[in-house]
Image (cartoon, rainbow over all chains, first blue to last red; front, side, top):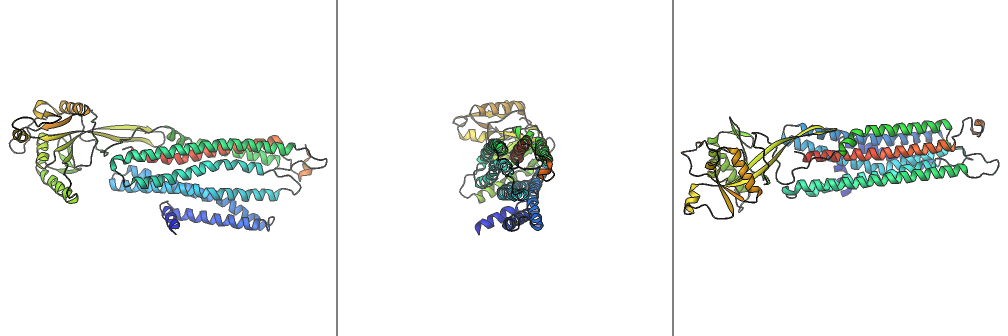
Length: 454
Length: 53
């Protein structure tokens, strides 16, 4: 019962899954019925009609499943274009489930409906063969057996990723991207191996079929025995032409997919949170620190935003205190890290953060990157990195007898830098060298006004 | 060559034609293998696209 529940749940995730599963089940029953009646009344017109219906049903069921996966892909692509983050993630998630479950259903149902369909077709051709003629169709039906490996590989690829993603769902967010990438790499290389096995099996079985047909045709016969009747000459040439035409169409049709699959993707950001914010512009630097989840302050020329909502500098302290209190209520007993993301900096902002207890700053450097994919088109992303610094002020130095706090760190004084760029460069340089950096705010200027220095 | 009359009015295929048919079906199976592989792997690319932020 649990298995049926799992299958029903998986079918629900496929666009039009009920229809696809229903048609697949109907085709399976039809094939089973035809196999039951075919030996009893092989040559009747009624049986032939049932046979044709069952054989036709196989590509129909497969086409419906292909369309369902295509619909899931369209859904997923529309999700990438969505501006709303929560809608984007739910649409993309629906697209992923639809594809993986659709491919799993397609591959698993192909394991039985195609062999049964080809068996029924074989029976039908054999029935039409004159009773005194040798068999000719058998060797032809060896070739599709070569596709079993890629079908099984596709099923294992999809089910492997469904299980892999489910096991990753509750892991540490820091390692999630690397784990997803690992699961994808593993799945893709296994699928590649299955495709190779299929290729070589098809080649081997084709050679075997050629040998069997040649042997059957050249077998010495007693005088008077007719030559193998086989298919008619015209039918053979037509069938060959149709097969080659279909092969060419498949080859050409798969070109966009092949081009997309052959072009590797740029490396994803493996550690830390992804911060896809490119405003305001930041110096062209790459910080070595991972970004952790924290309030994000964007400081534009004319406005300020926290987590993309507009704030004034004077009003920022209150919400920051509230976030801190909420954090402590949600994580009782845990030390408040005081993480804060800032793009870029302003002395008065740093003072507000310092007063609210946010002393672990991440200075963010972001740049937009564009990649052009053969089928998916132009895709933009924001690559963000961080350089960490903790805050101190003159009172901390006074508490230490006028000296810089002791420890393995470098103290930077904002007053030593004329603008943000040289400060950011120095900060990144120190962090890259593995040094902890303490940012000395000095004495608080009168009130919460900006000192005008970086 | 057997006269067409002996096979119910149609000309039977030669061994060469049957071999061509088998080879054509082999080519079709190879194209199917390639198409199915690339079709499935396209979803792999879409999943990688999710990581490309």
